[in-house]
Image (tube, rainbow, N blue to C red; front, side, top):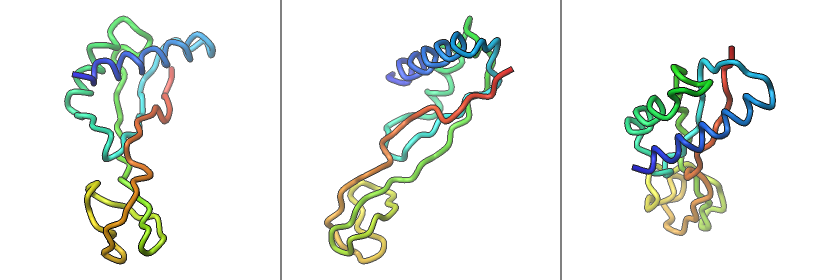
Amino acid sequence: MHEMSLCEGIRNVIEDQARIHAINGVKAVRVEIGRFAGVEKPALEFAFEVVMRGSVAEGARLEMIDLPGRAMCYDCVKEVEIDDRLAPCPDCGGGRLMPVGGDEMRIKDLEVI
């Protein structure tokens, strides 16, 4: 389950920021997750609760923000949203698409005490 290691990385970032900014507690962590990031959200929620124990983020809410998949269509020369990596262009129906987004996962912000 790679969601556990993702949460360990999130915890490291939170703890670093807590030291830098003298944060005593975190109420919420908002993460952006791309459609193609390969993250199992229920597993991430479970891992988050476990990994945050004993940290400044213990008991914090995990809020997940979905980001769409994006691709550049070489047929109509537009950046478009796609639901599947192998989907045709929703604008022109072309099949020559290069994924350009949707595989990212990043911390958007923290709600602190």
